[in-house]
Image (cartoon, rainbow, N blue to C red; front, side, top):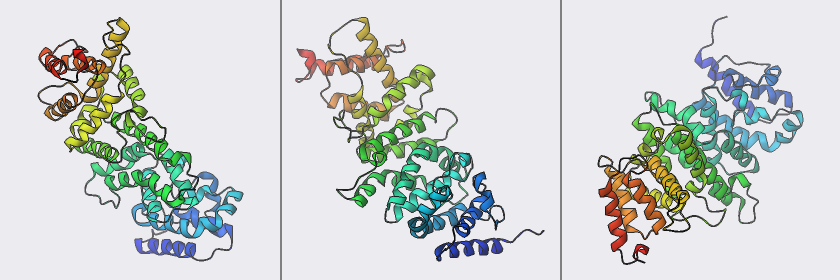
Length: 392
């Protein structure tokens, strides 16, 4: 049997789209219309193959070209009418596959691309209970690190291919979700816990930490630039507060991620950290300083500033190791980070507990190669500062 031309495939897809936009009176017809495109790109769950009574040729559907159209039609025409019927029949997953492909389809190369388009399509339309439920699914199954590793990293490696959604678009969409949901539901609306401002960005922070940690080996400058773009966006929307937040509704990147970062230092070793490269890629001094202030404010401090016990010294060394993992060594060839550190450390009134950690890190006590000149510079500041607690 001769293969169909691209014009014939397009004609069949246009026919399916047209029929989905028209009144549908039979659930079996709807199931047939929904299964054919999914089967053509190999993400139709096996239990629904029996509904594919009019199959399309393989790869008839082009995700970037056709999926946004299907998503819009499903949101505007299908889910408002057919969701209860499809759920009762046990086939609503056919609709969900067009937005958030399930675990069966997760390894398919098109799944993350479908999810990236779903974020964009949903946020371009007025939000409804149906689309909000899809956003909850997407935030769980296709968070920012999954989109990067499964889809956007491939875009970076193949610049000749044109993609309608960029990494920047993706970050803007993910960052806009809590505010758009809150505006859509109004002051009296019941916002789902997963999409509330604080919990949502705490989860984004955790997934960002996973993304940064994945960049340890064999990645390009573009990869680190992409991660730094994400951090910059989180700084701009307030996810790096200058002090520890007191309310659950206030997100904090380091409140959410320091436990995971410390765990990876213990298991993987501080030399494997990709954080210094990502921090070095930050394009703005103000962004760097905001991250530094937030990091320094979230490190653990000792209860008695001048306690010399082994337990206290161990805590100071642990936090100095954390700074070295995230910021690297304060050496001359990392002038951007070191200039930012100097401005933040010297420009703010830190207590003695912080000063001990700074000195331990900068002097190199965590690796046995002391830089006493750098440490003395900090000590001199704290001794000479009129507000310094070291004078008392």
